[in-house]
Length: 431
Ligand code: SF4
Image 1 (cartoon, rainbow, N blue to C red):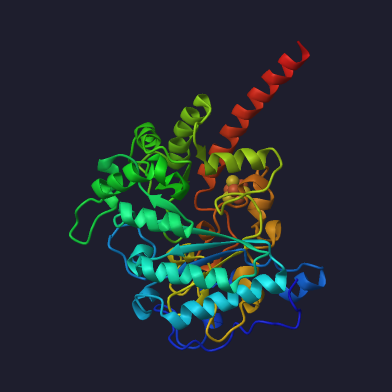
Image 2: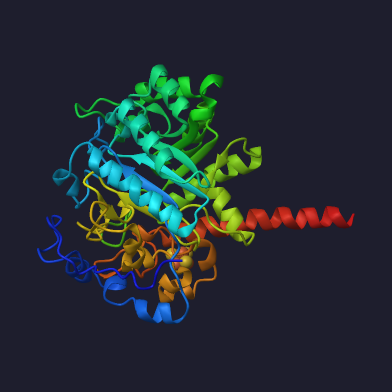
């Protein structure tokens, strides 16, 4: 529980206004770009009703701002938000140590027993393994022994060599790799600055990762859905890399930048995912697919574990390489400065983040949903979709998802398949 006296001043001045947000304050820019939550969320009423924030349990550290690839859909470099340009390429030691101290204080204050630290970028391996080792040693020394710390990393795998994997295994870091299916599909988007595809490098790294000696390091694969690609060929390619888990992500889109769809395919993303679902469900796995597991879990009354569906409170913060405390960087796909809070780990207590309207909006479940979503029969499963996908200029983040039709079709399809199996089992039970 946080001290109610610790209040955020989201109207405080920012040293360098993000591009696209008028000079003045983060709050001022937000209010113009997104009435909800910034002008409309009544935090005092929430508090009076007994609501309290959820402490942060996942800390995304942007240890390196640059990348050795130039993927065409990257929301860090290719979106309206260009804040990476004004930040140090590598997180300086004093920022790293301030971040670790803030995390330690947060863990002690909220008596957390488990947290997750995700090393992120840009490309986190550009930070160098010695600096990564120093960061991990600092976290282990700064967080009380009563709290288990998981370390994860999201990488494009270009620098993932055998010596790097040995070091990551020693450090206890679990690695997620971004790969978009078969070579032609992957190389259409995930290219070097010279325009050369990166599939060969990723494939080499995954060949190492899938070997028994590096199993402990292999966290899974992250694949961005592309309706241009063949879903089964994509799935089979990912299956060949033998990951323990696949995360399929919808490309970030919203009502200002709608999802790109083939003509005449209003639910192209759902159709793609349904084809993969059938293949996965009929085969009984063998690997885990997070979006399907989440939808099934939610349909059965459980909580969600990802940002793509459900209404569980988001307990995530981002520490940028200059120490800025931010909301999840998927919001960079909405408008410039959308992630900003005006707080910095060098000067502010991490608990001040829990009073920020943008952070609170991710923690209040159904109260963050639009009237259309509240009237929707599957809203507790869909949860309005990914928060970033609800954005519309001026009104902000209280809208249906730009992927609403896809979410409806996918969830209803999975429900029908699940329902048929449950009925079949019930008949067998009576026999
Ligand atoms: S399916 Fe559409 S209307 Fe229903 S909860 Fe999801 S985004 Fe909202």
